[in-house]
Length: 301
Image (cartoon, rainbow, N blue to C red):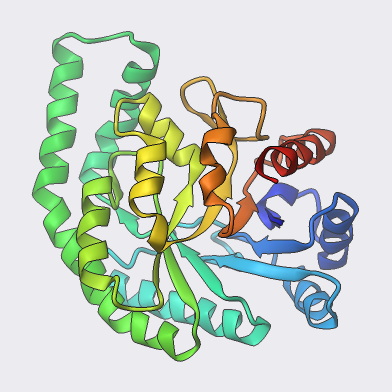
């Protein structure tokens, strides 16, 4: 029922065989190829998948890790307004599409991009929101600057994203692979819930267009006063191809084991039937991960 992102192994495991064996020992029958996967581990995971030892549920762009850059899902952005950067992101994503084709992976997960000038203010604003520490002049000024930057630059970024999808989706359709755009835990990210509506209206006729619902990210945004996680998931349920599962401790501590934080997982049982991927921080202990998987199996059975 559940898949495990290779992100959980972090730098602790460099062997693909060891990752597969440990996942199976913990009761997982499939893996997500997490962003930044160690390149040395990839061939063995592919080999074990083709042997039928373990399935691969999904691929999180961009993977494997690029030498010298490490692993990060936003090394490239298909919403970049710089044309060279946007084309590079398209090329890198097509490389991941070819990898998914080789292994037989049905889903690719993608962070679309950010509004950089809004990002400069978000962490400061978010910290004040979370700590309820500053509602004075400086907070209001930074909040205004963040909103103005986003309002000013979002239309160009969304146009760039749409033009990229016009190129990418036909390539994904040829392989019957879906591309899931993930919701992120910050206001500078694309898409917001409103922007998801715009994308859905334009691209939902493509069988390869999808959203990827990240439970923890949605909860972080809800805690900051930006929307409601359950409402977001229900609104776009038909387009949600997969789910990243993790809990949130406090207002913003995401990627924790389910059951350790504040998410009401019972209320999300309607997400069953999608690709369900535990995307858990490497700091989570193995026994906590096993317990959280059993917890959700019982809750969602």
